[in-house]
Image (cartoon, rainbow over all chains, first blue to last red; front, side, top):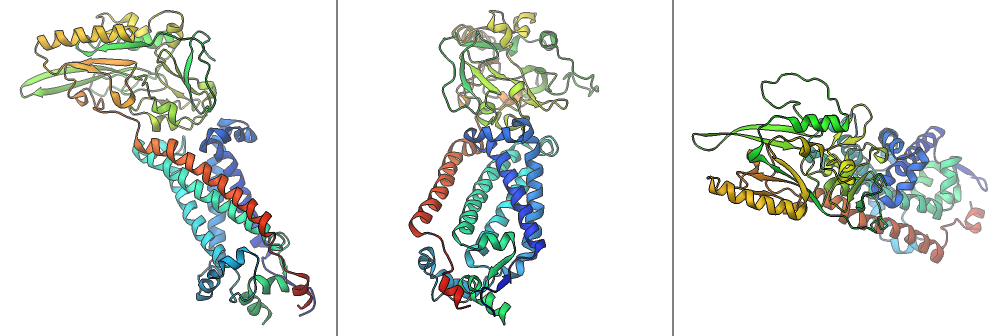
Length: 206
Length: 290
């Protein structure tokens, strides 16, 4: 392969899907944080005030769930956990110190990404289910007050989990140079592929 | 502040001190269920003073009318035919509405700053102009009182006529009650009066008569004198030991504090990691050997 050869990592439709998820996530997050804690209530001004944030938030959330489920569906084949992943995980201390030599050849995604997908999937399923329980005025009146109480607790907890996942995901993308370009322009260099996912590189480069 | 003459003790979703320079007398509305004749004058007075007109409902074959609280009906008489002892039929009539809890679950749950306030006189008031219509007050209330309006999506309930009380008047329902079953005054006076009523009821054969002022919500500013204080559920399901649901406490108190710390820690962790370890880069050498 030629010097500085570029490898396609994410197709245009994958990238579009990813950014739809991201866009819906940011809107749902910003509109929801105001209801998570009063310290974030000022964020509701971004949407035209508390009432607008309350009206819009569930629609952003439903959009997030839809696009995320599509994403998980299409990426699932690359998200199966393999024995190499567990070998890779043993080098976690080195990886955190940017020592990337002698890593087992893993596939397109690493174990951290695969676990993040699973955690986010579980949290978003919980957010969707609990969100429907408390969605005013359309669905909440159909459920008992006790069920709605469970709904708000689950919703707050799952929101916390998904926010931590988001912070980890955004930081990891920034930390791992080249990752953001792979999701904007779709390509990585051959060296990047070997550096991060040697197994995937072998499969692609043959 | 909606009412300049009333000081505020608690304000929903507010993390700074609330205006409270003045001290107001703690008030109580005492509803003596043993004196109520079910005339519904209180419902009418409530409609009149607050300019509320509920839709005309269906006859359901019972005296309860309207059938339930709504954004237009802030108080309803709840009629119960019960047999507290075999062969002894009693018709218990309870005026239902907001209990104005000292520890209000609605206020604790509300995410909208200033949509719910508790005045220092004990009245818990909804300010609909700040309400976002999320329905969390419904989730937080141990008495199932707040109702969202189908018209504007805001939550409504009894104000204990805070506008009247602010200018030294009694609530409209207390003013109109023809039998004196609804009294209004200082908490001290009302408790004193209630104690006398309990003695009287006990003398007249209601051995379990008592005052309903549940400690689970730190007491209420609407209290009942009940003939059967040991069995409040006889009065159309008045809860025996109401309190803010542990789920609501978990949601609002413990969880959110820990979660905010967790989110902050995740952000700080990322910054520290980047500053100490730097980016995970593919080196020039690696690129060259491609």
